[in-house]
Length: 290
Length: 266
Image (cartoon, rainbow over all chains, first blue to last red; front, side, top):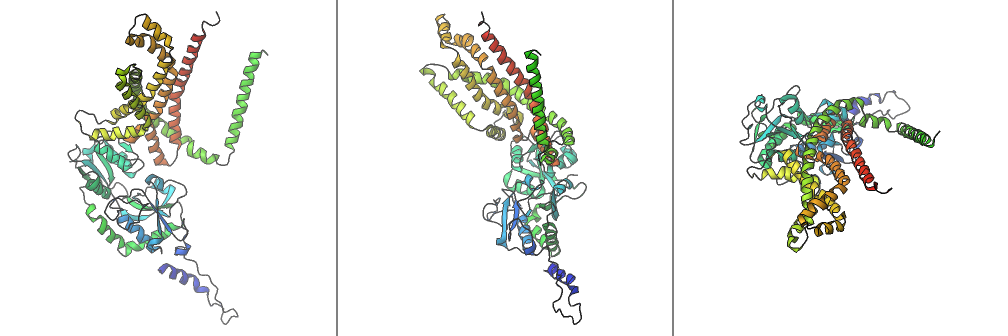
């Protein structure tokens, strides 16, 4: 890897200093590359432990039949996040069978405290508050929130945020979706707050809420599979800085810079783009609700 | 010092010493600073207490409405269960099955199944509101417990009361209404109040349906700040409501005891 060569080259200029000296051995000051596979302090030696939630939904993870994936079962490389996870692992020097999966509920991944994974990939958006508790990698996907409603509901044809003023919206607790509702949509009715996205979907189907706010690619899966009589009303524009998904690592983890290097490489050589094309291209267009 | 004043003095001093000892032990334990930051953070408490107290109004509405319905429906179930004679066996059986089922299924399951499931059936005229289904679910579950409490009360009334009433010419229904049930209910007021206190806590389960009540509000605050003081604030709100009710229960028990012992010293 270029990093290792760079490491060697940079530190080795003190070799062969003494002309004709009695000590033939050059002074070894090669700095160990902190991102070399044997230098990485992973939670489990020799393995890369990656965390995600259970079940893990398409288009982020899917099993051989295209259904949501269970991390306790056979590993999968299908799905955008699965592909990115294995690509990053590969850049770090881990082969596919040196990757182990850990179930980490969404809310637990970005809480402060020690982690039982090396990095977590689960549609976790960077927020400054979360970044005080954990480390975030650079973006592996820039994302917008969207709202899903049942066809024929009163907000099904909303064209702007103003049309959602009296909507009863819902989102899972602790998500940027909930924050977006409260900070940017500001409907007159207090939003319903659920334990999980599945519960929010149950509330939508029971017509207890008018719409669920969720990231756009997940909204596509929702309307395709989980809520067949649902439709994506539209996507919300980014307010302030663009929201993005990052890998979650323990606070001040030594792996963060290595993971960022790996992501940088995948971005530069076009891998991230082609993976997005493969898994997310048909899931990125919806009218924008201004 | 009179022996009364001395007793009071000893009680006060020993209480102060005990509290001081516990406080010193806790404050000097190694993890105390972190625990204090995490669970007893003054600033977070001041921030979340008003929001939690406001969200608590949802809980209050729930348990006030539910309790009224529970007391009525529970009594009905208990009476049905104690109808004598082979002709009423199916009704007794129904009551038994009901109490078994609704004491057996966890309350949160009943809330989730009714709250999410019933509106989806799409039966016209059936409300979808989460508040409605939460009340129904709590009433169904707690009536089963309360029915058993009433039944214990009814059975504790001495059979001579019923015999006397019947021999005076009162019908079965009249006996129940004028002689048995009033005595039975008076006896079981403490356990009924106990169940009411339990009901107040279980209203937090309605959060699963998305309703933002006190516990969910605390969860929102906790997720935003990674600090658990909001949960402490919620606990305080619940305790503040429970204490008056518990003292009232104690007073009722004491008054009842005094009434029962009233004739003894004659």
